[in-house]
Amino acid sequence: MRKIDKIKQYVFPYLLILPSMVGIGLFVVYPIIKVIILSFYSTNMINPAKTKYVGFENYIKMFNKVMFKKAMVNTSIYTLVMIVVVLALSLLLAVWLGQKSSRINYICQMAVFLPHIISIVSVALIFVQMMEPNFGLFNSILVALNLPTSRWLQSSDTALMSVLLVSIWKSVGYYTLIFIAALQSVPRDIYEAAELDNAGKFKTFYKITLPMISPQIFFVVIVLTIGSFKVIETIRLMTNGGPNNATTSLVFYIYREVFNNTDIGKGAAAGVVLMVIVGIMTVLYFSSLSKRVHYR
Amino acid sequence: MYGVSQNIKNTANIILKILVIAIFAFPFLWVISVSLQTDAEVNTFPATIIPKTPQFNNYVRAWQAGPFLTYFKNSVVIIVAIITIQMLIMIPAAYAFAMYDLKLKNILFSLVLIAFMVPTQVTFVPVYLMMGEWGLLRTLWPQILPFMTNAFGIFLLRQYFMQVPEELIEAARLDNASELKIVYKLMIPMAKPALATIILFSFVSHWNEYFWPLIMTNTTDVRPLTVGIAALKSTEGFVNWNTIMAGNMFLIAPILIVYVFCSRFIIKAFSYSGIK
Image 1 (tube, rainbow over the protein chains, first blue to last red):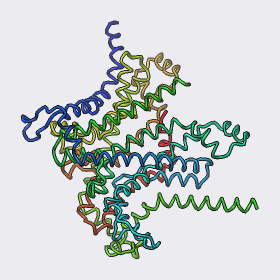
Image 2 (image 1 turned 135 degrees about the vertical axis):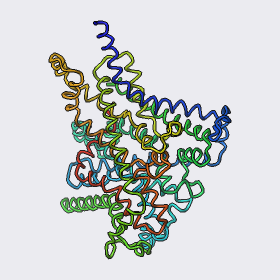
Image 3 (image 1 turned 120 degrees about the vertical axis):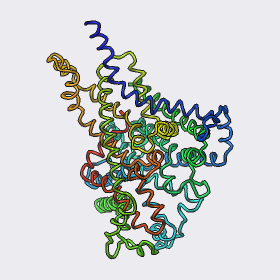
Image 4 (image 1 turned 180 degrees about the vertical axis):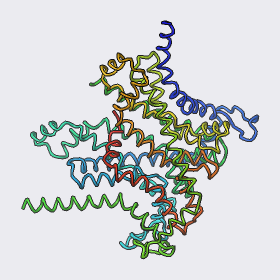
């Protein structure tokens, strides 16, 4: 009897964890391995017998494809702009709105954060309508102000920037909230000491605030990078990759290869590229976390 | 003199803040305006700001433009199923991670962290093929099963469970309380804020989810509201923006109502979702 009890005690906790591991195994670990395998095969969906191992052929062909190159360039521009603009804007808003808790500051936070919890479907539809070149609100306003109008999403020169405008508008509120929480965790007495030393506002911000919230800044940069590299919904909804591939992104490329060209091999190869990028970001993030623990 | 310039500064500050509120809230007033405009008003330049007589009929038109009762039902069923399954799986797992010293704990917990970081954009191709092989593509399961393990939830709940005082658990064990009873009567009440946060995040993310159902559904009868609303744009063409925006309100309104009533809780939950 005692032996059984001991086994029970040893096995029981694993039984509690088991269902969660089934989920992770089936929908995270297996797909990661499978996507790597698929990237080395030419998969024939109609006749599985014709599926064959092709080595690095998918990768070589993919890297030579104009659409893939365009997708990588677009995604890199998108990521860079997102990091710079969202980081700057959300820091600015956080310092501005988070200093004092007043009614107007709270309403402001509420408004800035609102787009984050609304579906990208709703947001994209609203902006596509507002950016419509012939009847849209944006051009109406520009005309009223005697400014030149824009083709917005319908010109390959402005489409990516228009998509970025929407992405920035939608996500800046979330990061503002994170920075406000971070700023509130900075001990007050440090600022008082700086004031006694007659340090100016800018100097205090550079020398004290920024270093104190650098862990959160790093977190935001990582999350923004991963989030930008996996962008698809906004693009699918607003431009469908066009015009002339001007807004094709890495994940939109995967989507196209798999569902329009049924070229699973190339889609999987691009999936591996995304996985590597996300992997590097994740390692960077967790290694910085463990470093922080050391310093304490 | 000092007082005057301070006054100007304060006024400028408030005007700027009102401008910021307008920039972020205006598009949501704009949807309502367009959803109430006549067909002619939608297609005039410059754009109509306020409709002359509100066309509430647009909402009926939008509701009839597709099987919206089905879409709505699917969204609700998917969310309820996901949250229920996640709870049943997450609570025991978080409890085991928090309470027991296990040999494989580090490996298993790093798997949870990996699951937290890997985006669906990486996994969707194999999962789609798998769902096809299992013959599930015409059911709601591909939109539910892949989310059975909520890695973020396990992570957050574990932290709350670890904060429950050891003495309380020991006392319960001395009273011969079963593990189930300890979880149910002691741990869950202590972790209520965490559970509320987890439910909130699951609700918001799955109500809004577009990419996953777009890929995992081939027929209208399994599609959620997001995919249905997005489809309005192609069926209603470029002309009937009023109908599209009325449909859009079906998607926005539930979240907006929740936000108005629980904004403090929601803002707090997202503020601290960053790290810890």
